[in-house]
Amino acid sequence: MRYEYGLWNLTGGWRFGALTALTLASLAPLTAQLYRGPGGEIGETAARQEYEAITSQVGIEQNLGKQLPLELTFTDETGKTARLGDYFGKRPVILVMAYYECPMLCTVVLNELTRAMNGLDLRIGKDFEVITVSISPTETPELAAKKKANYVKAYNYDGADKGWHFLVGEEKNIKQLADAVGFKYVYDPKTKQYAHSAGIMIATPDGKLSRYLIGVDFAPRDLKFALAESSQGKIGNPVLSAVLYCFQYDPSTGRYGVVILRVIQLAGIITVLSLATLIGGALLLERRRKPKIDSSEVNE
Image 1: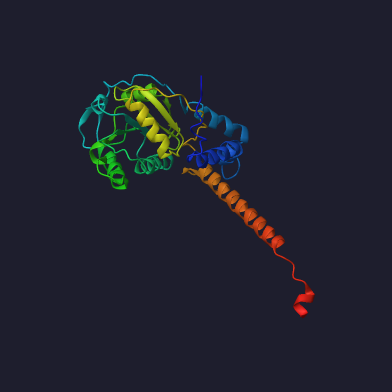
Image 2: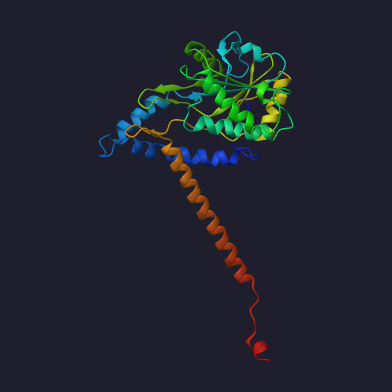
């Protein structure tokens, strides 16, 4: 089976690749630190076990070619009941599993998707549809409507108001859809947050999964290629991916996203050091290249 290095490509994925590499390198020690209380009462072993017990249930399985359960019903942002199949039949569909009150990663995914779609010469509602489904059964159509309004405004073209759908639903239907697309997530009652991964799915007009874009950095060229393939009913190849969890928090304080923020800070420090080294090397090279002035010429 051939794998495509969609995450690490040179069309924009390098930024997420660098962040993910730092995340994976830092994950174990930083997570252990987060789980210690103010007095260090939770040990590193217990912290790791607790962390692994949750994240082992999280991930994205690439169920390429699988038929989506189009008979499932959800509630849209207007409060109306709709079948999933109502959004299929004419155009390929971008599917996003998220939740609207997610403190960090879901917003990043939606923001980056919007950025990528703004870079396309394809248009929502004309060339493709977008469906965002909340994984939280407690979220309401009113919350979905607010989220939709933000992204309709962020999209630079017409069509998002009719072609981008924000859905909520019952837990059994959400779970059935998530299982079909391979989106594994788990709810943590301690922090009242969901652990999940980052990525989007593309489906053919008849509802078969054709492509996965994993991570938070979606290059417009990759997205356009995926939509073009999907519109023709073609099923793509799986991509190698590193998983970025929307689940880095300190249970003792309830604060969210500490690990990823620390990783971003670390990435910033590395970037600054790299730039400093580059500038220093350039200055040194420039200094060496300057011609030496003969003292006899100066006296004359």
